[in-house]
Length: 202
Image (tube, rainbow, N blue to C red; front, side, top):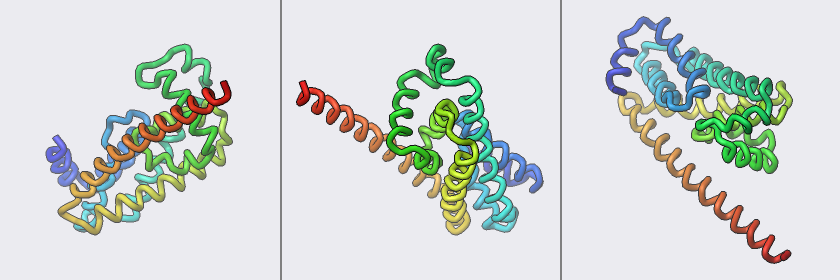
């Protein structure tokens, strides 16, 4: 399926490829199963072989990533915490809300700065930022910086590796798997320490 998508993009007019890169960059934050990172890396590959302009790819994917973050931020801000808690959506359960709220309590705006590096939690972070009524100007700047850093990393990898661009995709997948493990271990340690403190107080 990936190879077919790559072949299709390769033969489309440049204007359509740019538009698709932008749309996918927006939608991958709103609908996480969409492989936005893979698309960014392939866009870099197309720039590397001279089909696309690397700065245009960088600008559009960064704008799209930031825009996708802000869409969910505004949805969270509009509906508020109680709405999502009462609905308890399968894709956004109470447990995720409580977990990310704890992260915001500890890391604040730093969590938005890191959101692009936390692929499994990007959408939840943007919604919780809105629910938490984070300052919109601060949120835009932090989300933009995060997108700039992450996309620059992906684009430079795809651009310089060239035909082996899929190696970057594999590395990103491995990074995401490692990240999930680290997050799970961190949460287990957090709850273990909390339980130990409560037992000590008791």
